[in-house]
Amino acid sequence: MSIESDWIWFDGELVPYAEARIHVLSHTLHYGLGAFEGIRAYTQPNGRPGIWRLREHLVRFQDSLRMARLPSPYPLDVLEDVCLTVLEKNGFDEAYIRPLAFMGAGRMGLGARDNPLHVVVAAWKWGAYLGDDGVTKGVRLKTSSFSRNHPNAAMARAKITGHYVNSIMARYEANDDGYDEALMLDFHGMVAEGTGENVFVVKDGIVKTPPVTNILPGITRRTVIEILERDGIEVKEQLFGRDAFYVADEAFMCGTAAEVTPIQSLDRRVIGDGSPGAITRRVQEVYLDAVRGRVPWLAEHITTR
Ligand SMILES: Cc1ncc(COP(=O)(O)O)c(C=O)c1O
Image (cartoon, rainbow, N blue to C red):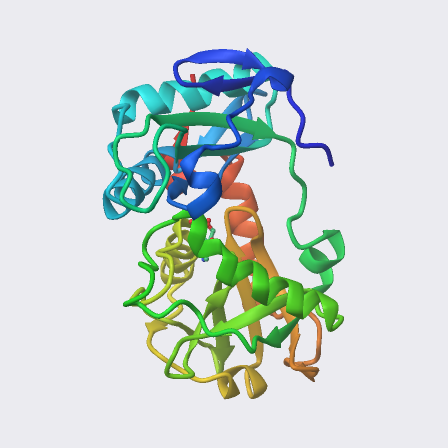
């Protein structure tokens, strides 16, 4: 699927895709200090695009900027409007939306602070992040040899561009070894998250997920917990080891890009009977209905124009 679109919003104006360029001495390109978000829009029952939990994504974007000690040049209302405009101008009804703030050229070196901050919002068509088969049959995970960033080395709550080197190393390793995705453990060896997803395990009808101490506080994770609790299913936010997957009845990952993706196996140990379990399928179904405006009690989370 192509990441091309007609227009990208760049520092206050819409520019054609081919003209959305930056200088090679842009500070973020060298050192990784920037912040970004990943948001999805879906076709709503009236045929128009609606953005799922837009405000929450933009609040996290601004929080990431604060944690990175970067100024936040646009108020939330403006950013909200920009995301809707980018969709409309590109004629997208379903798309992935990528706000990104980065330091441009000016001074070099780690002490530079006054370089201009640039903000872009792009959008593109993006299907199932972990593949169509992954969504229907489940993905095969490998416990990564890379630990999740230590909390004193990187702030897990922030989507800071440079943090993702850690995720990319884990993802490459897993893919090179023949797996779909990596499961990352924290520095104590407890389960943290996927490289770009949060994780859940199910055993005897009880659902567990790591607490948001050293992981990204996923917006999909929050929705999943709301869906489960509405169904009367208990969700325990607690630390656990990789062995919880080895004995689980079901497991799944979730994220804006990955949506709700079943986990078929971890380290070649098949989970349950190897096919998506009932709770996973239920969460997946309600989630995909909710983002398309078909679940009334979650419809308030959709932003349209
Ligand atoms: C490291 C990491 N964990 C979890 C998630 C899932 O977060 P969300 O559901 O807000 O997309 C993401 C994606 O943004 C991520 O990059």
